[in-house]
Amino acid sequence: MSIYKGGDVTRRAVEASPQTYARIGGILYLFIIVAALFGETFVRGTLIVPGDAAATASNILGSETLFRVGLAGEMLTCVCDVVLAMILYVLLRPVSRNVALLAAFFRLTFVGIYGVAKLFEVAALVVLGRADYLKALDPEQLYVLAYVFLRVHSYGYGVSLLFFGFCCVLFGYLIHRSGYFPRILGTLLVIGGVGYVVFSLAQMVAPAVAARLLFPWLILPAFVAELGLSLWLIVKGVNVPKWEEIT
Image 1: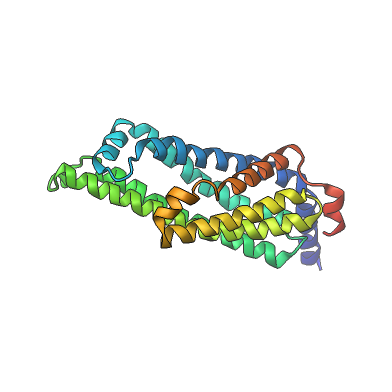
Image 2 (image 1 turned 45 degrees about the vertical axis):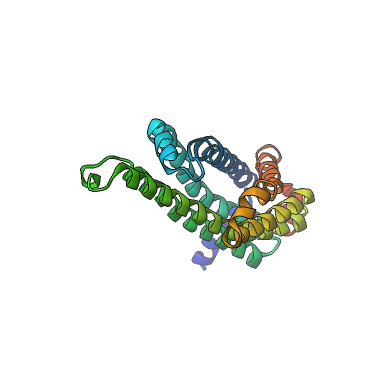
């Protein structure tokens, strides 16, 4: 009997603080967006020269600290994403526990693949590190090998977006139905999630089309939705009365 009461008290304590979860989730989400944008735009976007292994290697070696900071920031987003998956599950499980759990699983799968993809950036740094055991290879060979690792990272990142897209679709669906979050945010998140899925599949099937025609246009709705959701969680949080109605 006492065990049951303890569990019930714990459950109600968790459910009684949606605003705390919302504010923490919003801050984590904002950090994820900023760190990911920094890594994609200001690090890889400026250092990696498409099709030119030597120029890419020169840029990375000349701005190694920037490359490492970007990598560290994106690895921290993996930690934040794990916590955010739990927070979004807690906030949206009153709408549908099973769908919220599935969405959280998709987000965790995304984090796993994304984290593995980041190891290829680490591998590129190792190859360009001029260690003694690498002297058997010519500099040009090392540059090409590092570039190959960066290309594998790019494809791995694209694969991870397939799972992230389904996560966005499911969480967007729950937000749209919730009644305690703006329906427009849910709609945009669903559209953005579909964009992630299409971009991920296109990168595997027709990479040239994905790079030149689809990016970043398919990603923009998701960016707007995710940024809007993060700011809403920080500033407004949850409509607690409506949240409690269906809890």
